[in-house]
Length: 369
Image (cartoon, rainbow, N blue to C red; front, side):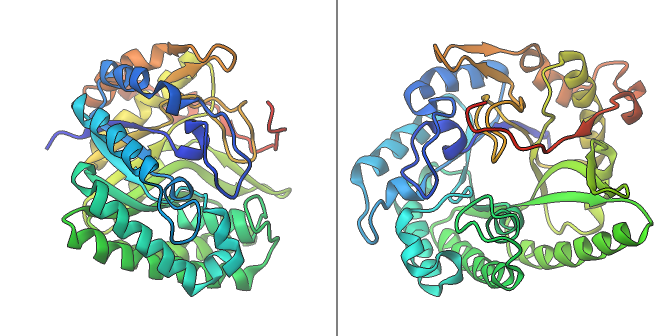
């Protein structure tokens, strides 16, 4: 079967309105320009358009659903399908309605039940338009950002016991969402952020052991899903001063050892504006994906938008967005994206990972940048 080619956005990072537990960001103003954006997506040749439904818009007050936003999302997903693309739809992408914190957020069984009621509403109202429902984006990263690093609400720092409790509740929510979505005939999964760890020093060995334990936990959950959905960017290692991250695309091949069932790569990408560097990375990933054989490969991101804790400076996009005029500009990579992934041109196999010389940097930036 031919691999499906896609690109991704998320509500908070690109839509321009969230009404959620984070301050609104303009993102790429996708809500106002989605018709044009979807036309470009089809022009680029995407099979899959990975997007999201925002819980905070659909249920702005506990137990009260917004008919206006349900109708909006129905028209929006019809527009995706009308352009011949398959909607892969995240139902939770790091943001929550504000009212969840009255109950303790994801530490609360009540919030799990409210989430499942929202999932059932989406399945009933929109399920016929959803090709794959991504019940939760990167629960491992969400928990880390919320309860370890403190970047997201409730902004807890190194609250490891709370992190484990939240992980258990999210796992319960994932299994419940699977049952609800399947009852409506909707395929279900979640995405897992897979960062390989290398190194044989004591710190790296400890990190590798912890990463292996986490992967095993999520692999058990993926056995209950219709797809194993992996987001992959970097290899991490300890250099004596801290954890560093490098692009090593071939490390993704190790997913074959632990990923059960059909595999989809639901995010991959590089934060850089250098088009030669971006193309070398795409070429290398095209060769890796040809060997791995996933059902879909989805680039992060389709539009330039907000990146968690880093503002607008990291550039991953296929389509640049002028944040004053909201003009869309296709990057050179966008025009070569589909053909490179599906038929890597001569020379791709000669581009080694060492040629990239690229180290991932996570330095925080002001939100305005």
